[in-house]
Length: 390
Ligand SMILES: *[C@@H]1O[C@H](CO)[C@@H](O)[C@H](O)[C@H]1NC(C)=O
Ligand SMILES: *[C@@H]1O[C@H](CO)[C@@H](O)[C@H](O)[C@H]1NC(C)=O
Ligand SMILES: *[C@@H]1O[C@H](CO)[C@@H](O)[C@H](O)[C@H]1NC(C)=O
Ligand SMILES: *[C@@H]1O[C@H](CO)[C@@H](O)[C@H](O)[C@H]1NC(C)=O
Ligand SMILES: *[C@@H]1O[C@H](CO)[C@@H](O)[C@H](O)[C@H]1NC(C)=O
Ligand SMILES: *[C@@H]1O[C@H](CO)[C@@H](O)[C@H](O)[C@H]1NC(C)=O
Ligand SMILES: *[C@@H]1O[C@H](CO)[C@@H](O)[C@H](O)[C@H]1NC(C)=O
Image (cartoon, rainbow, N blue to C red):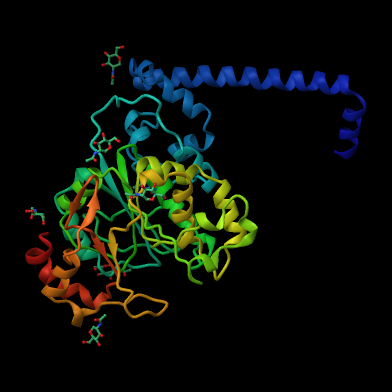
């Protein structure tokens, strides 16, 4: 090998000839394969081939997609290039690497009108370590609203969610990677959830949840609140103390300046437009993965800082996920079975302090709440209909 390479270097003419030759061979092979595929497609899909030719073209450049399609027979007559598969992957188990996935998810149609009836959906993205102890409450929340949501679950690799085949959580696990809390791998998992959810063109809003989160309003209220909002809900504030500005690293200068540094809850809600920015962005992600090391936590600073710097006008700067920090420790309060009362639930739903929503004020500040222990499930199910209205 080494000798051969030397020869090429000494003979630029020979190298050029070989290059031209191999280019020609690849080109001819491409044409032959293209023609063969076309003939094959026509046999199966007849006149429809014409309608979908732009997708054929796309797929020809995506060997991974094609591979995934051929090993994933959903039915006998699987059509890997149908509009349906293109708009909304049916099987969430794919073989894409993060790089490939983020690239694919970063695509935005230039054409504004959709060639199909698009019902905007809310993507509920669960970032969990394993089981979902509050699953029955969520299943009740989602009941009867199938067309308006999609669920994505990121667990530790190898863990298999045990849910019934009729559950909306059935087959909604995405290909996951190990996550260590407090490191950039947590941010990676959030971006992986976003990217998977972006593959469904109907998803319009993207909310990140944990296994200890619960919905505190019914589905209709949550859906209309999010889909009707002009802003995303990423908490972003300037904390002058050691847990805020104290986590800024001087090596981030001059790309990120101290006065631009922000803090906020990890549990975000994003519009589609902002989600695309997040999965496409590499500059600030790289700075954070290099310099935001403990006691700097990327999950609490990357989104609040990035959005503050570049997309501030799209953000409400507040969160829709309630949490109780009144204990003043490093962890928020966890509510168990004994703590669940009607008064308590009502006070989270409406504490008398209105919030800004679009150009108006509303009594609804929070749509979700954390943290709830598994023992809270039974009392919550009892209160769900009367208090949370689902
Ligand atoms: C494909 O195009 C043909 C005419 O070229 C039309 O009759 C047919 O309905 C189209 N199919 C779809 C699925 O749009
Ligand atoms: C989804 O695809 C994976 C392989 O990529 C396969 O193992 C699995 O059976 C498929 N699931 C369904 C429901 O087709
Ligand atoms: C899965 O859940 C069902 C019903 O909740 C239970 O009977 C079964 O033992 C569970 N399987 C595993 C592997 O945990
Ligand atoms: C949120 O903060 C940004 C600055 O980062 C600001 O431009 C925007 O107006 C704020 N949003 C609201 C709703 O006040
Ligand atoms: C929950 O209830 C327990 C037992 O009554 C109590 O000790 C604890 O302080 C309560 N937790 C909160 C956050 O109110
Ligand atoms: C939302 O934003 C659009 C465009 O900026 C504006 O036309 C519309 O009035 C806003 N809606 C509300 C309710 O503020
Ligand atoms: C959902 O909640 C809203 C506001 O709390 C309420 O007005 C509506 O009646 C509820 N819908 C159902 C179906 O219970």
